[in-house]
Image (tube, rainbow, N blue to C red; front, top):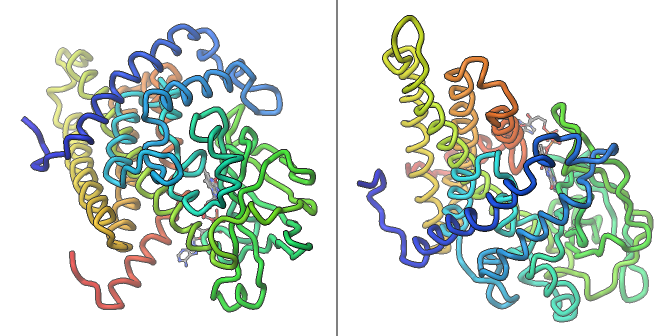
Length: 411
Ligand SMILES: Cc1cc2nc3c(=O)[nH]c(=O)nc-3n(C[C@H](O)[C@H](O)[C@H](O)COP(=O)(O)OP(=O)(O)OC[C@H]3O[C@@H](n4cnc5c(N)ncnc54)[C@H](O)[C@@H]3O)c2cc1C
């Protein structure tokens, strides 16, 4: 019996089954073998909040094993050496990974190339030289990258970025700063967005270009790691560009037309986060349903109390709706439609209800729900943060409103 009256294409069902086997063989075993290391966040990060070398090595091992098995770069375009799978595959893969790994087997979160951290459609238009220089190791999972758009003065309104790439002979010189850049402390490359034509940029009519920049370029500085929400370590950092030389072959796509490439990435991020939210929500709900069957209070299993079960039924309704919304929008996107309204609705809804599902699962577990060993608090933090990342809940509602006011009332 399936809750979804929708048959996945055979390659997507095969992908999902393959992911399950991969996680068992390559992810869970690594967690088990390194249980002592993973049990204590103080061993995972150094005193500055960066992953210790052994953890980075384990992450790289998972990426590379997945690339070898044909999963890692599945969503990168075929013309740059990826698998060329579309949005539906991307959603299904991430939903499966998060449902199975939760936040416990977190090495699994590295098995598919995340759009900002590895090969994805964002790199479709890199130059032939960059394809030769950077792509082999990005595709094999040996190297990773980051996506540097946000700045201290430009978040939701990303077109306000001030980082400049000024002409310097046949290339450019990059100066400015970026903030919240995930994976930047560990990446070998950064997709950096910079103003190349200030007049166009001021009129919001282009003027922003995208560059693929090696993070070991002179003047490329990881200024500070940003510890978030009480964590002892982090993925996010502040970057400074001090006159970084950019060669012509580092331009991605056309000059002054990089903003669209950025938005393509953010669109993928909205699908990724919808998959993450539905997956983590289901993972949390499944744990809660198991717990209520065994936990007793006042002489009964707590499953017998409506006060316990109705919130879980609420989570089931909402997760089912978000799941269907995501399958629907992926098909719209895969058929070439822009689906701005549907993508905004899906991401905003999925991350809100995913977070609420985790919250209810914590409540169901009583004090156990707040222990590190349950990993539910970690899932809550993840999803609470993505109520801001890749389009805040308010910005997504703003996009939905704009579409409606423009006459799109198709629901
Ligand atoms: C965990 C995490 C990882 C991130 N990783 C990256 C990364 O890898 N690369 C990168 O470039 N960026 C990254 N970001 C940054 C992210 O893209 C921004 O945080 C996001 O765009 C919001 O910008 P802001 O934080 O500056 O908030 P602001 O834009 O300052 O917004 C502040 C508040 O005002 C509201 N608001 C703003 N404008 C409107 C409006 N028009 N209508 C209604 N409400 C509005 C917002 O919804 C929000 O509640 C990350 C963020 C997080 C939390």
